[in-house]
Length: 220
Image (cartoon, rainbow, N blue to C red):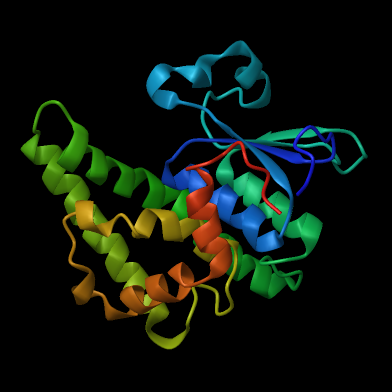
């Protein structure tokens, strides 16, 4: 067991949302020791001045790497930037070949710019909005189905979005697994269904999803 007071641990600030799960999964895949801190967005803890020093956009996730590029602590926010940073630093799940890297990047940004915002809106208006807004429900449900169609076609001839398992898959998985609340039927997307099963079976993914249930425990 690692000493959870150690200054050598990466600090992960997150909540039980897809964006939060992304980084927990990545840290688990890398086999790194880290210290989890739940930031309860329902209580407004993301606006705490100390958290804003790390994440100026008052959003989770964020990390502090005590061993940054210059040997000094590096605070970092935005899930895509964190995944790229960790992938570069540890040379894992993010290729160094420029062609392969560009392929990963385009699917990572597809998630950050499209899948996250659009599926998030679909989930919100279908499940959580205090007022049912038919226009919003139709708009975002339709867009969710469109994005699923894009992904289904992409996975027709490869097991993962960029061929090999990468940060693009790690980024997409926590969002796509929300399909039951998005107005799509997973059986209509057999390639995505198989992709979800492959990723969900990975031990590190299971640990990453479980980390939010007991964030004070140091992993590894």
